[in-house]
Length: 192
Image (cartoon, rainbow, N blue to C red; front, side, top):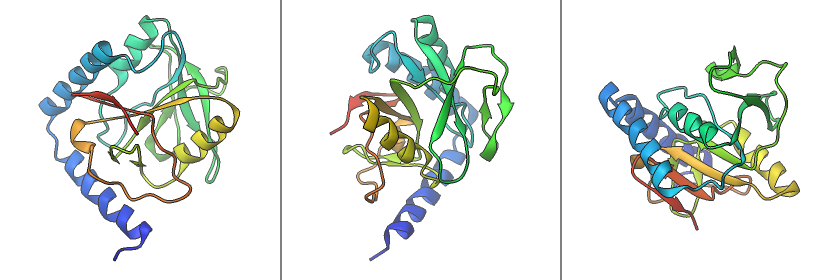
C-alpha cells in the first residue's frame, strides 16, 4: 500500500507525462472545446469576480475562456504566489494588460494592480475525480486559498483541464479542498 504522498507523486508523474505528450493540434482543439463547453453549460453566474490562471507546463489554454468571461461582464483576476506556505493573492487583470514574471514560471499582474477577492476560481489541475478531489503540483496553494476564502464567504471552485484528466479516484488528505465544478473540453459538471 502506498502512502498518501507516494500515491499523489505517482499520479502526478503519470498525468504530467500524459499532458506533455499532447500535440499542438490536440491542444488547440481542446482550447476551442473548453470555450464551447463554457458557452453551453455556464458554471459561473454572471457577472462575477473570477480568478483565472495563465497556463504553464502544458496546461489547457484557458485564455479564450477568460476573454469570454470578461466580454460577459466578469471582473477578472490572476493569482499571485506570496510565498511558500501562504495562500494566493488575486490581482485584477483585463485582457491585454501586461504581466510580470512570478514564481514557478507563472505570469501575474503588476503589484500596482488592485487586489480583489474572487467569487469563482478557475483552478488548474493535473487530475480530478467525480467527488471533486483535485491533484495539483503539490504546493498546496489552492487548498490553502480555498480554505481561507470558504471561511469568509461562499466561493465556487471550478477545476479546469482536459477531459482525460478526470480519473476514477484522486488520493486526498485532510488539508485538501474539493472542487465544486469540473470544466473540460468536453463537459461541465457539478461535482459531489
